[in-house]
Amino acid sequence: MIASVCHLFLALVGAPFLLSVINRTKAWIAGRHGQPWLQPYHDLLRLLRKGAVYSRTTSWVFRAGPLIGLAAVLTATTLVPFGQARALVAFQGDFIAFVYLLGLARLVTVLAALDTGSAFEGMGANREVWFSALTEPALMLSLAALAREVGGNGSLSLSVLHLGMSAAVWSRTGFVLALVAVAWVVVLLSENSRIPVDDPTTHLELTMIHEVMVLDHSGPDFAFILYGAALKLWLFAALFVGLLSPVKTGLPGVDSVIALAEVMGVAVGVGLVESVMARLRLPSVPQLLIGACAISSLAFLIERHGVLLP
Image (cartoon, rainbow, N blue to C red):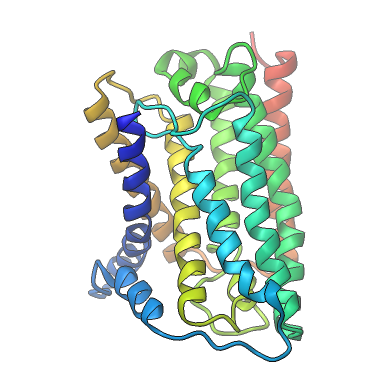
């Protein structure tokens, strides 16, 4: 329990630092110095000290959106294991609750965007819902494949899947896990609005997805949105390394350090992807996401029916 609380505190404190790692990686590739390592924390504190401005056309939905979205992501954080410890909250079927909590955060963000009556924010909300409808099946199918292989008895708990991952599992069914890893890379980039699906640094409303939905938010509300986005990136990175990394020593402290290094490695990988790739044209994004769904489906079918496996 103590280790789970410490890991939760690490996620809450360290999530914005992932953004610094990504930005510094991109700056290093471009030959620039880059922003200070603690810049995301300064940005959040600056926004928290500001006041919020609300349009007369908005209702309580617009004001409640950032708070409910952040609360949903914070609740989802308690379901994600880390290192060699179980999640703070673990139960049978918690990975379904995890997906639904992230879906709730997306829902309230979309509703808040639509509540403004802005054509640009409505366009971004439409794209967000469209792409999420293609991303969530890939996530669920890949988790189902892992549940059958790693969980043994088909456990639907993230903690059970996390603790069951080992080098022996990789040696037995590495092909299935490799397919899941490929699908999760696409899911991670899409769910966190990163290149090649979206560009979080652009200021062109016609090309934005997530950022265009929060144009009218300001002050503490915008800080809640930015912090929730950073925490969501941490969750997907922690899941990626926790459920797919076979590196486990059995020593809780050492495994926690290894997991933290792997999470930072995921952030470096995101920075490298954004440095060498351009944002895809919007008609090409669904093709990428459908490809991730196909890969996840293939992994599930191979595990379910033993296709292509001896």
